[in-house]
Image 1 (cartoon, rainbow, N blue to C red):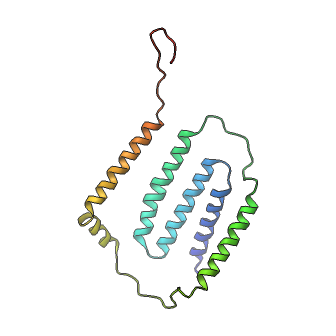
Image 2 (cartoon, helix red, strand yellow):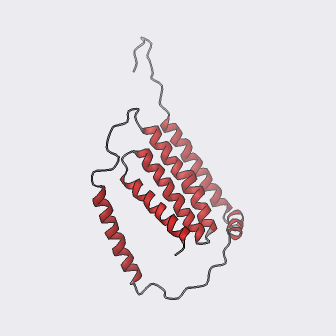
Image 3 (cartoon, rainbow, N blue to C red):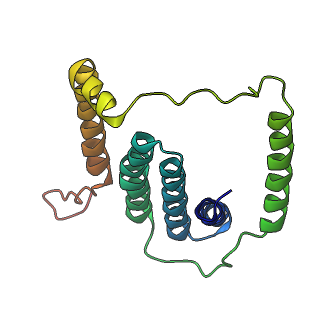
Amino acid sequence: MSLPFLIIAFVTLFAAAAAMSLRNLVHCSLAFVVSFAGLAAMYLLLDAQFVGFAQILVYVGAIAILIVFAILLTRSGDTPNEAVLAPGWFYGIAVSAAVFTLLGWAVLSSSALPKTVSAAPQTTVKNIGEALMNKYVLPLEIIGLLLTAAMIGAVIIALKEPSKTDHSGRKT
């Protein structure tokens, strides 16, 4: 294992653990953004440029920002003074480490795991882009319209309705 891989893995795991254990929702979502960026860096280290850049564009650039905006739009003005970490953070980390170890052992000792390394696929970002712009252009545009409609709906739901008053001056 190389040093950049170990650094990125440590940062990604630390950010994911922080996203699970912090009490402040904004801090959790920002730690979530860091873990998404760490996954994108992992993909780029594995020479999967399309998946890495798609991870950055879709998850870091869109989903994580949407989560931050949703939290900021739905929160009340007061912030509670609570502890930074959840009360059972140690037990959560211990259980997740045990499950990770058990699943890792099961995968590595499985007979379904291929013992030989296959040749790398010849799919490039250029090939994927040509397929998206030629063969799959209609589904791509439909997804774009659907996401735009969902964003407009989220903005409309987030807007507060002005209070209505009747002719006598009372709020209804």
